[in-house]
Length: 333
Image (cartoon, rainbow, N blue to C red; front, side, top):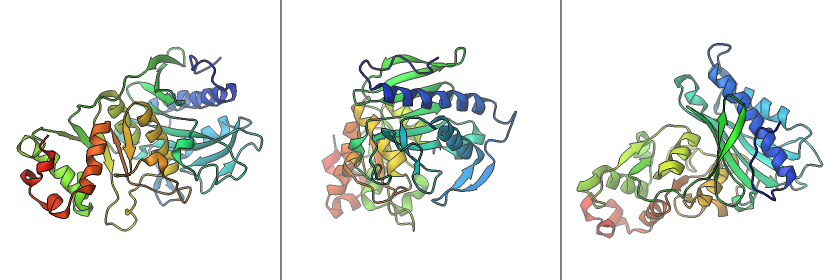
């Protein structure tokens, strides 16, 4: 029985099979997460991954579950946050799968939404070359979010489809194509505890939001920060706004902390397909080419008008970005 149906007509059957295999793991993970603490401690420490980030038990469980489900599938190359290098699963496969098996794992014990992010490229003979390429080469991308409902947001290049898991049947039900990202949200998401480390344009952008109706925007804003990329993305797809994870002056944070291949590129593809924009603060993320499998990048995404505004702050003369809130006359609109 298919776990995921109602996919677009004419979609490659090989891709449909891959998406259905992923969906079957989402169902299993959703059930396991819902029983967390009853059967096992999913938030327990499980070591460090290749990039020096702490792993939770569920990180490793999810990675192993996806690799098992994709054995003998059309996935030729598998690139995961939890693996040191590309794993070749099937030499005859048509696809290269980039995946963050469990995004937001620091939130497991707090019962905040977590998820899986994935991107699907056409496979090349060279495993690394299959992933070290522009995000615009993606055939499909999406995420599963494990929260009050388990939902799957997916694009195959023609808008963004939403599916919700029916817990009674164990199958995903299509809710169709979602609406475009709203442009007028007053929410922005950034970890403001890093303010002192940011470059001047990012500080200026946030200063103007903090100033609210008394600053140059003449609008009051609300700040959000969940520390779960899938949760931030889901909110923005639903009601608009902007997410910022810039690079900063701390050692190891010059290029932010989010990974291009299996976090930023797949999310950027979704966001653009929903009418939004995704950049490194200035240039489109999907045009970038990563230089390593675990390469990081600054990441700004959300409503197109808001993301464009961030880029404009980088173009201001120094005296404008350094000025007091009310002096940035360019933004009195």
